[in-house]
Length: 81
Image 1 (cartoon, helix red, strand yellow):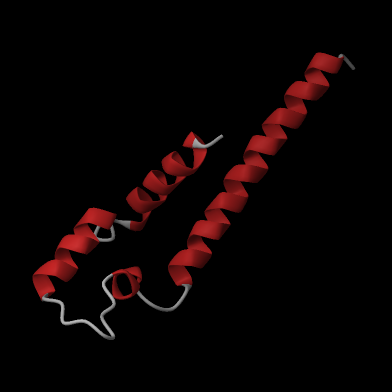
Image 2 (cartoon, one colour):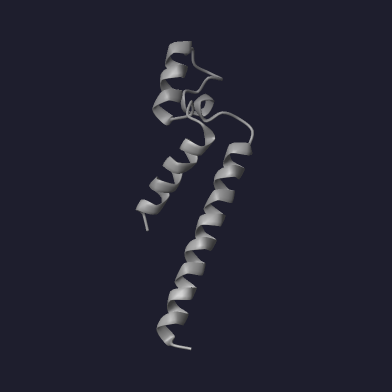
């Protein structure tokens, strides 16, 4: 086999594995207990209005569908590569 074909096949396999692993990581983060807004705004110790909570959720994109959140997460993740 040509070395170029081997390298190309391995690179494609690497991309697929990275995509699958990053998707699994995203889903595990979504399934974890708790709400990130609670931690960001310190809801256990601070007085925060519902408007502030909704604004933070909108800013973080937590009101979007799971597919849109995944797409944004993948795009931000692969910018670093």
